[in-house]
Amino acid sequence: MTKNTKIAISLLAAATAGAVIGLLLAPEKGKDLRKKIKDGTGSLTDDLLSAIKSGKDKYQDVKEDLLRKA
Image 1 (cartoon, rainbow, N blue to C red):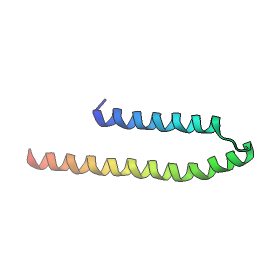
Image 2 (cartoon, rainbow, N blue to C red):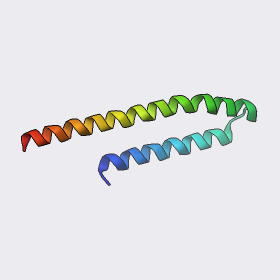
Image 3 (cartoon, rainbow, N blue to C red):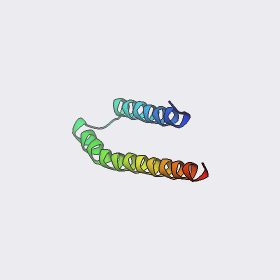
C-alpha cells in the first residue's frame, strides 16, 4: 500500500468512527435522525466520488508525465 492509500483509509476510518459516535450520542428522535442521515449520505457520497475521480485524474497526469520523461 502506498502512503497516500494509507492516509485515505485512515481518514475514512476516522470519519466513520466520528459519525458512529455522533449517532450514538445524538439527542434526537430516531425518525428525525434517520432522515438527517439519509439526506447527508447523498452529499457525502458525491464528495467521495469527486475525490476518487480527482485522484484518478492526478494519477493519470503523473503517469503520462513519467512516460514522456522516460
